[in-house]
Structure formats: C-alpha cells, structure tokens
Image (cartoon, rainbow, N blue to C red; front, side, top):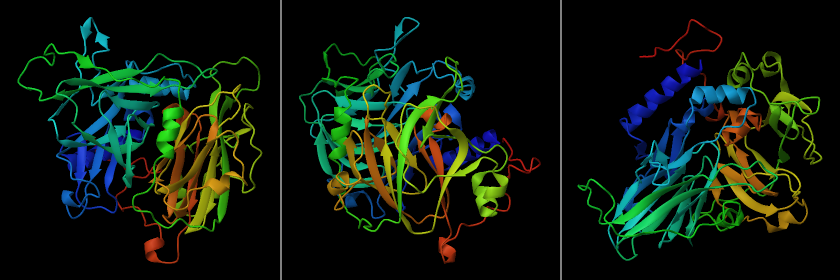
Length: 482
C-alpha cells in the first residue's frame, strides 16, 4: 500500500510541476512558499520539492517591493545509505545513522570530498542592485539549519505561506518542514560570497553528531559559459553562530509578527498541555534498541489494519482500532526522564469550530536530554502566541501572549529546554496528524491524531472517498505502477 501512495503522489506532483523541482500555483487561498514531500518513512529525504503559490492578481500585488527574480533554495541532505534500509533500522529502534552532508539545491558544496574530488557548489548568480526573493525550504529529515550569506542581510517577508512584517536579519533559521520567504538585495561589492547552511545541534547530554555544513556561492555576474566557478578571486565567508547556540533560533522566531493580522479567538474551548520527551520502552536496564519518543508519556503507534480516516468516516474508530486511546482532558503532571507508560494510537476528538490551545513543553532541566522539536499539524494553520525557556507558568506566561499580530504557521518549533503556545480553530473536518517533523521522532512515537467532527452543513462535512480510491481492506483494489 505504501508504494501505491507514493506513485499516486508522484503522478500528481509531476502533473503539476512538469517534472521540475518547484511547482507554481497561480490561484489559491494562501500565498507564499509551501512544499510537497513523500510521507512514507525516510523517502522524503529525496522525494520533495517547493510549492510556490503566487497572488491571484499577479506578482505586482506582493505586499513588498516586487523582486527582480524568485529563486527556490531547498536545504536537503545526502544520506550515504539506502533509504529503505534506513527505515528498517529505525523500525527496529536503531537511531545511529546520520546524513553525510546537507545540500543546497541538491549540491553538496566544496566542503565535501567524494573519492578525492571536491564537490561543486550551488551558484546563485546575481546582479548588483537587483532584489531576489529566496523561497527557502528546509527539506532535511531531521535538522534545524542556520542559513547565512557573507556580506548580506535577509529581509524575511513570509513563513509557511503566511506574510509577516518585514524583518531584517543576518541569519535565517529553519527547522525541518518549515519554509521562509526572504528578500536578498545584491548590494555588496562585486565578488563571490559563501552561502552557508549549518545544522544546529543540541548540547550535551544530548548525543553529539558530526558537524553538518554545506556551502554555495553568491556570485556577482557569473559567466555560466565558464567550465569552472573559480575565477581566482577569494570567496568571502560569513561569521556563523555556534552550532550549539539555540539563541539565534529563539530570537528569530520571537521577532516574527503577522503582516495581515487575523482576529485571534479569545475564548478557548480546549486547553491541552503536551509534554514532549524520549524514553526507554524496555522493562529492564541496559536493553539495546528501546528508545521511543512520546507525548504525555504515551508513544504513538499506527494502526496496522484500518486507516484512522476510514474508521472515522465509517464511525467505528473505537471498534476497529485496537490500540485506540484518548488524550486525557485533564492537564497532566509534566514529568520527564521516565519510561513511557504505554504505546497507543492516541487521538484527541474535538467538535467542529472548537477553539484549541496547545502548550508544548520540552524537558526544562539541564541534566535531561532536550531538543528543539518542530511540531507540525496537518489540515490547519495556527497562531503562535508565545514561547519561553524553562517550565511553562499557566498564570504568568499567558500575560505575555501576543494576541494582536501573532504569526500564523503550520509548524511550531518548541525551543530547547522551553515551551511554545499555539491556538487555532478546528474547522477542517477529518483526522489530522500532529507530529514532530524530525523523522526519527515521528517514527518512534512523537505524534497524535486530531479528530475534528463534522459541522452542521454539507460544506462542514467530511466528503466520501472517490469511488475508485484503493482501500487498505481490499487487496484486489490496486493502482497500476505505470
């Protein structure tokens, strides 16, 4: 069934993109940069691309000066291992594999040396005085990346296809699954300047991995007819943040505010506090390959026979999903560093148009392992109301919420040793995955399903599947591989 889903997805993607890496959509309800990717294990490491959504009335209607050119910048990773084999290792709870190097638009850059040959850099050819809209996608399987260009600044204008007030910065920080639109003005002296993508790494006691870094080159008036990109002039390198310093990420996100603020719902129907952690599922000390990730001390397990959406549509979820468990309504005691109590297909049911507020809490003690976790919700955008370090205070921290112009996103990066609060209206009926976008975390249980009930009209009701849609229960219903 997994292969069928991938083929169907690729057929759609190729029909839209014409076989290229970036899809252009001229008419949509949102504007900006999103992305598409495989949703079967680690296959998204290579099956992905940018989805560019332009304004209905044309490029002259951007809420910022029209750029001279738009350029997708996709931060990816090169895994020197078969991705199906990698997925098998993860299923067996072996998490010792890491990419050999990040890539910028598929290029490894000159810091990589394969078989004694230095790899080529991605080259961004610019002309002095012109403005470029960089549509940045973090398609990495795991890591958060700092992006810097020597001698230049960025002006951030959108995140996750939502416009923000222009924000000027030296460093753009994107977590796995996030997108950023930023203007780059070619205002430096003509020359060559490194564009550097460097992974952010949690400090010890988190396990340490090799430094992940890749470089491209911003080249003024590059002659593409040359056989080499080396014209003898020195390449200026940027000053990079320390790879263990999460401060640039924290402040980058804290400086984002909505350009076109939408009313934030003030009356909250559902308050959820979700503790994010990892643990050992084995019952005895020293057992190998037992790490799982968890939300509120429960590690998510996918059903093996019936899809959740199918069970929900047929109104028999509780009967057909054997490991179904409801996320508790009562706020849990936030405990970290303990073994998970259970594995379950964890869901949270809400009525249509319910206003939901979720506070994600990472481990906050320096003696525990804590990571930044990009929590992604399918089917909805949400307001990011606030973030902080340490333990969330339900009385004090609420007073600092941004209820005026919070940014709208589809992925919320929970800071290391800290918390993040989001709020949204559950107005899209169906079953929606809420998960960490780090593949090793979602594969090991850092997820739950949000079940949004139907509303009172046909437009607010989950539509039936197409008549010819293949069913997991019908082994004779197959989609051709052609």
